[in-house]
Image 1 (tube, rainbow, N blue to C red):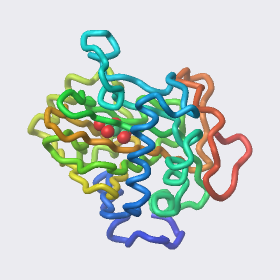
Image 2: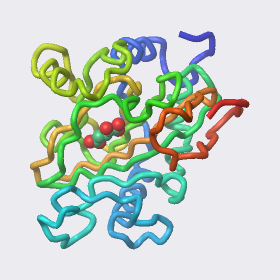
Image 3: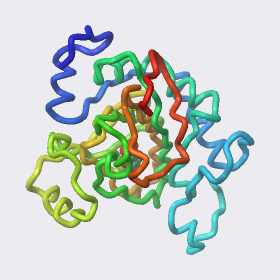
Image 4: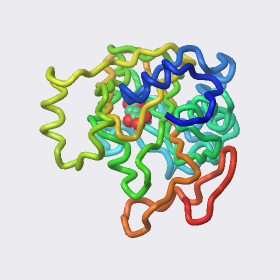
Length: 263
Ligand SMILES: O=C(O)CCC(=O)C(=O)O
C-alpha cells in the first residue's frame, strides 16, 4: 500500500488486487471506443492498415505453417503487437484515462510508461490456447517485476470461447523459471485455485506481471478479441545484460515524470 490517495479504485479493490494478483473492473471503457477498437483490429488483421507492418501480425500456427490456407486474414490472425505506437484508436485507449487511472491506483504512482501492447484475436473454431505463464518470464530484464496488464474485452469473453484464467495469488511466488511448466500445469489441474475471467465487451481485467494466467482454445463460433496493454512505473529500470527483446525501446511516457537511469 502507498500513501497516494487512489483516484478511482476503492481500498477494497486495491486489497483484492494485491491479495489475488488480479482485479476485474466491469464496464470501464466507453462502448463507442470499444466498437472502434474492434473495427481497427479487423482492419489491421486484414492487412489493409498501412500504418502497421505485417511484421507485427502473427497468424495462428495452422495458418503460419501452411497446414490450412488463409481465406480471410481476420479469422487467421492469432495476435498483433506494438499497435498503440501506430494506430490512433488503439492509442486513444492505451493512453486513455479510463484504464490509466486504474493502473496509477494499482501501482500507487502517476509516473507511468507503456511497456508494450498486444491484441489477441482468438478466432472462432481454431483460436489456440495460451499456456500458463507469468508475463515477467518474458520480461525478465525489467525491475521491479510489478508491471500491470489491462486486458480489455472487445468481444464477450466466456469460458467456452477461451477467456483468461488466473491462478489466484500466484504473483506472491516471485518469478518461476519457465522450465517448471509441467509442475505448474499439474498444480493448476485441481490443487491450486484458478478462476475464469468472463468479461462483457468494455470490461477490463488487470493482472500483475507475476500472476500466472492462461486461456483455453476457442472451439465455438464466437470469436474472442481482447486488447492487452502492459504498463510499468516510470522508475522501472532494465538490465541490458539480460537478453530479452530490445525492439520495444524506447518506452513511451504516458503521464508524469521520467527518471535518469530508468527505462
Ligand atoms: O488473451 C489471451 O489469450 C492471452 C493474454 C495474455 O497472456 C496476456 O494478456 O498477458
